[in-house]
Image (cartoon, rainbow, N blue to C red):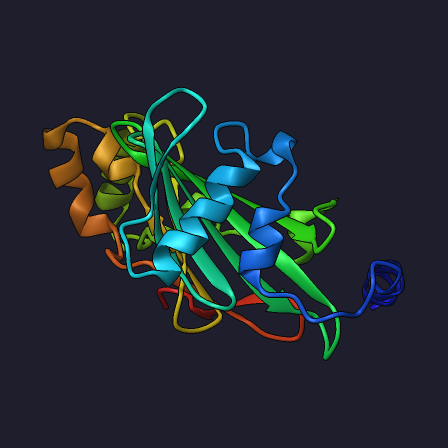
Length: 216
């Protein structure tokens, strides 16, 4: 708990005024928004407030679109190959952190999760969530022959890929295993019987995302 006390003290120095995700997003430093300017981000919010499609031309001259904006959540399609979600989460009654999920949409979705204080200083992500190891998505075969088969199949699934999504409706986070979408179709079909086949769900509680569905 010492780190929480220290973090609270540090964040109190930033001021205790209420903030929503909109104002924080517009104030995002350029270093964390390489494709979108402050004007772009403000335009997103204005367009949605006017019930217009929230599209802007980014720094590369391509179209970016804000898909959703609430008081504590937003989703932006940065490009055809990337998406960003943000969620404002409470540590206590007056201190909040921002969870940012950046998803890269190549042939298979893969996500990175980061956390920031409301001054956009990055915080250690493992203090707020411990994402699942790859084994959590696999059933454990009882028969030795099946276990051998799974070990052989996983040699082809040599990259751990996962898609993380934040919820706009509550304080939950889901992790979907996307490695099967990366391997060839035949291997993916053979892997299916060994997989739980549903996302892992985490819920924000006491300043941390904690698992509520562990594929048990």
